Length: 218
Image (cartoon, rainbow, N blue to C red; front, side):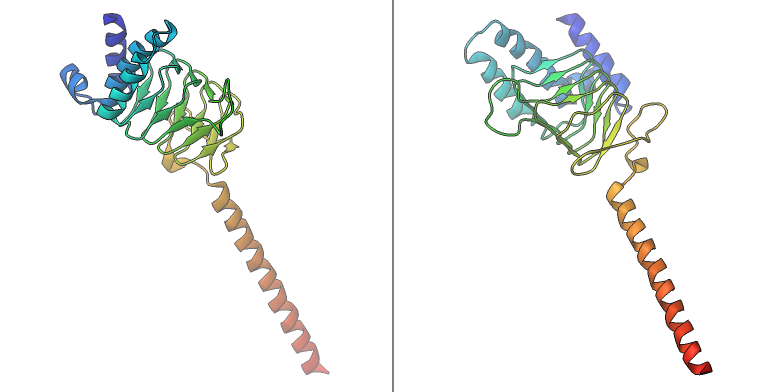
């Protein structure tokens, strides 16, 4: 248990440059509190102890604003930055070294039974407000942009943006999710359409000018 706490503290220092001291992490980081509560609740859940795991989960939700179902399987060095509004469903599976920002939902798509929540590989980063829904696999080292809605599987080493989420090719070489540098497929499509309209207008004006010029000469 103490090793797990130390590893979690080291993870906070690695992921958050605002972390100044161990005491600050112990007292002021809701993501740290939520994951420790989940580790305990998950063990009790696996031991099939009734009710208590959910009580621990709901207490953690009340104190931190982060809801993690005790059934969710979460790997090592997991970090939730800020954390308010994060929801992680019962059959979610999360690999090692995963980072979530505030407002992320790892949820289902209906009332189906069995495996109904996403599986995230190692090194995944999910931006603020993103939704990953259904029994889908998100590959290793995938980056999901803020506000994206992902409902289809994503291959390894991809970056996903938009609603619905689309796989794009560009991301920082160091693997950091650089929100300001993410491509905007919808914006690009609008720009392309505007450019095409401008070209057609220019062509039409030229045709009208040629026709009027021809009429004047006759």
